[in-house]
Length: 269
Image (cartoon, rainbow, N blue to C red; front, side):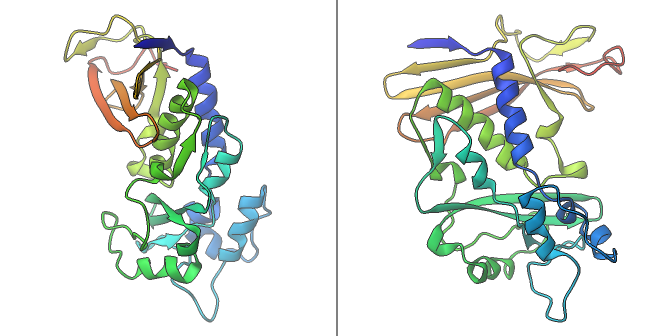
């Protein structure tokens, strides 16, 4: 088995790129605000331009209209577009990523599915809205893969597994706002932040640097984060892959909790 350390800066740049690309339009994050406006906001991107088709209401209001009343709707965002710009991994041919959003007041969540192109028509996606009820029962369109990472292909290099690990977490976080958001509060680290009174649940790791291990037929990536909202916690993340696929067996384990109120007023990065 060979182990390759990955510079923390590399993970941070990959994550920054993913987060900048996987953006939900503000008209879908806060639909009530835009529905009450006389004119739609000026779009800053093509994704924002697509969201204008959701602006306001019509005489024939459809199921997928954005709302903050606790009804799921289809997002205008195309999550699969980010894979065009990533090296080493890509979306399999004839597949599409589709995101549904749920907004209730200032909080909200989302779910992203991978579907064959033939199952991604608007009418097909709308059918799943009929069976959705509440935040914990999201729509699942017929034909959707159980894990959206099954629609990802790549060159199976160590870099591809780093990309896949971060992509999966950003897709799971996509659409989450308010109290539901979680991964957005995690900061990648390569050492425990200083000036904290860490209470360890187990023996602290000797090496916090991100690592990729590749052996015959298998691969694994390990990295660490610090959640910067209370309770402040250090997490270990381990994703294990069978070569030839990007669906992972994943572990997200809390290792230590900070027993001081703040980290000298600073958040770890």
